[in-house]
Structure formats: structure tokens, C-alpha cells
Length: 479
Image (cartoon, rainbow, N blue to C red):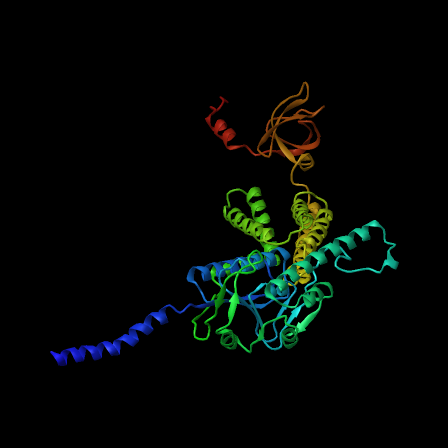
């Protein structure tokens, strides 16, 4: 009995360390990594919000935003910043890989995160807001040059308000995270930029990491204060990231689809295919396929356009250009409507996306390609119209002149009767002529629905099958 108890005690002593270690390994909080590349837009906002929601559900140790962006939309940037400030999970912004940048909107996101880090050979800054289509906004003019009138003064005032608002916003984020507020002001007002080591020296960022593993190693054991602007004295969290499992949030089919549809060039192409498909279905009902394809493409285009900063004047010009081009196929303008449609389309495509930020706007080569296709189709339509105009008349009153008709019955008194022309019965008039049934006449003039005819000498229409049958049935006369 003693031997059995000793054996069980030794077995329990061997199993207890494994049993204690297993729960710790299972309960290790993960680190979620989200890569944000390209322009900051609605799709990026959706991805960041979904990642932060998942991190909160899984009680992740940290969320790492690896960004490489030239900037983006102000509304999208503010949406991401608000999601970060409201996140119960610490968020680290890591500008990577080497050669990446966090320009414009990326600077605000970097300042909003609990931890700001950069890889070597990266840069941050140039956070001056850009107002598109309003020259002079965002720049300060010399008072000596103030002779441009009230319009320029209004633009300068709007630009100053925009810059001051952005500067105050970035400074508030710097104060919240304890970073350099003076440089934040320079980044907005003077478009200042810093390299990674310079940003570390100015206390714009918290650390420089060679790669993701180096970042997690340096963050291990660091205490992070949580809470947003409304809770600056929020609780603290101690990071445990050295051995934490890393989950990279890859692009799924939904993200890829949303990203593709929010591309201005594809949205414009879908809009054209949708409109033309519906027009073809309306003009030739029963084909079904053009209407189905056009309806789907039009709805996808409208969804993509509502994700972009659309100039509705440009959209109206595009639709007007398409309408002119369709009308060219039905109205004999010999290219006038088509040329106007191409011009309206080009101007509308250039004005469609109201933003000059990188990643937004329709490329000029793409617009030129579509305009060239329109011009080629216009040339084909004009050539077809000219060919049709040069062909002889095959219908209408002019086509009847000079044709032959067969007299069915004729009254010499008034000089009127009926004739068979192209399988139709026409009333005829031949003054001074005695016409016999079966005789051929030629149309000389058309008076309303009456034909003026004259006989063709020495001609007689061959007997029709009914006449031949009647002649065969008549009895022969006696000699």
C-alpha cells in the first residue's frame, strides 16, 4: 500500500507542472496585425473597425496597424482615429516596411495610437489639409498682393480655418499621447516631415523597430494607458507580446471586392456599361442579358461612387455625354451630337472625383482611352449615316415614281380606275387614255393617294393564275 501511494504521488508530481502550464498557454492573448496600404478611404475604415471589434471580443493583447499610406480622405481618417480612441485594446501604429510612409492622414493615425513606431528608412508628416478645386486654400498670401478681390479673400479665410482646425486636432492627439505638440503644429502648417530616427529624437514616435518581431520584443512588458480624449486618466495595461501568437488579418473576398469597387476608374467603367446595357435593353426588348448585366453594373457603380468624394457636376456631364452619344445613332446630326457627347464625357470624367489625393481620381490615360473609343464609334456611325444617305430611295412616294403597275379595272369616262402595284391596290388616273385590264402602266406622278399614270406601249401583263383558271372554265363559243 505504501508503495502504491508513493507511486501515485510521484505521478501527480510529474503531471502537475504540465497541467499548470497548459492553461497559461491556452490563455495567452493574441496580437492582431492589420496591414493598411494605399490611400485611406471608406474601405480602410471598415477594415480597422472590424479588426478592433474582433480584438475586443478575443481580448487581444495588442493590435498592430502596419501602415504605408500617402494620405486619404479627412472623413475616413477621422473615422479610424475615433475607432482607435474608443478601443479597449491597445493599438500600435507601425510604419513599415522600410521605405514606407505615414503622410497626411497617416500622421493623424500615428499620433492617435497608443504606441507609435517606425521602421528604418521611413518617414512621417506633410499633414497639411488639401482643398480640391479651390486654389489658394491652405496657403498664406502676402498682404501686399491682396488685389484679387473678395473671392481670393474668402478662399484665404476658408483655407486658414481648415489649417487651424487640422492643427488643433493633431495637437490634441499629441497632448493625449504625450508626444511633441510643436512638431505636430509644423506638420500641419508647414507640411514638415521627419525620418524615423529624427521622429524618435523629437519624441514624435516611441521607438524604431527593424521588423515586426523586433517591435513585439521591444513592447513586451511596457505599460500602456488606455482611454480616449474623454478618459485621459484611463486604466493601464501591461503588454505581453514577446511570445504572444500573431494573427495577420489578411484581405478576404469582401475587402477585395470593396477595394476594387471603390476604385474611381472601375466605378466609371461600370457606370458606362450599366447605362448602355439598360439603353440597349429598352431599345430592343427581349434580349434580357443586356438589361441584367446593365442593371447589376449600374448598382455596383452607384455603390462605388457613394464611397468616393463625387463631384455631381462631373457625374451629370458624364450622363449627358452618354445621352448625346446615344442620340447620335437616331438623330441625323452627322457627328455634332457625338462630338458634344465626347467633350461632355471627358470633362465629366476629369471632374468626377473631387479629390487630388493620391489614390483618388480618374487617371488621364484612362479617360483618353475611353474618349478614343467613343471617337472611333462616332466615326463608324457617321460613315454608316453617309452611306445610307447616298443609297437610292427604296421606300416612300419618290420610290413609286417610274414603277410599273397592272391595271385591274378602268372607266374611260372619268379616266379613273384601279391598278395593282407591289401587291397593293392603288387608285389611278389616266386622262385621254383607254386602259384595259391587265395592261401595264407607268407611274408619272402622285397626287395624294391617287397615281397619275400613262400606258406603256406594246405591253400587257401576263395572266395571273386566277385569270387563267377562269379562262379555262369558260365554254368555247360556237363557230
